[in-house]
Length: 232
Ligand code: HEM
View (tube, rainbow, N blue to C red):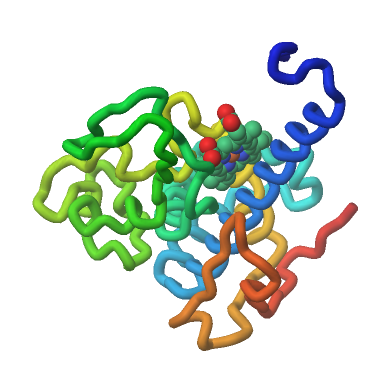
């Protein structure tokens, strides 16, 4: 730990730890909520996803948490595409904290003065029509290297940072790998035990945004059907 920054002050260390917990929980929670909503809004995608993730879990019905192996969740390729597309269409963070330049510079032809605060707008980057075909459509095939959806609308490779829900460079999320593994477990376990249906049909057409900054007004009610009771 950098003693220069923390100066052995407990309040700063506690503050930092709280940021890690909140940053970890609200992001994965909103991604899971959004994924469940987009599945209900896109039944053909949900059917394909459930076809991949449910059968292997039926074999380990009694003790999912104990028996579900990393090797099994690692093979859920379509789930990964669905998670990535969920993070594209509704990034868990709409905006990261501001960044400022240490010196005057020119970014892509734009002069930026030293200490000007800049924000990376994930939402707009993820819906840039120069990078994404039909950007408002939920389409996991965008992450299938063999698909036409993998390319820009004019058939070129996408910019490497066209998809950046975890930011990039030195400021990239330190929990990225962990978050991706957690989602690979959480989504199949939830769909093994339950089925979800949006309780308000209006939300299928007009889904309230859910992200790190969401408040109680973004709560999306669902009808829950129990498939396999949770046994503790
Ligand atoms: C879907 C899940 C997640 C998303 C989309 C996400 C996204 C991000 C983004 C965009 C940043 C950069 C924020 C900024 O610079 O303003 C960030 C930073 C960070 N994330 Fe995540 N995150 C996720 C999950 C997690 C998890 C699970 C953890 C911890 C276990 C975590 C810990 C952190 C920490 C500590 C930082 C600050 C890193 C730094 O300042 O160098 N995140 N995350």
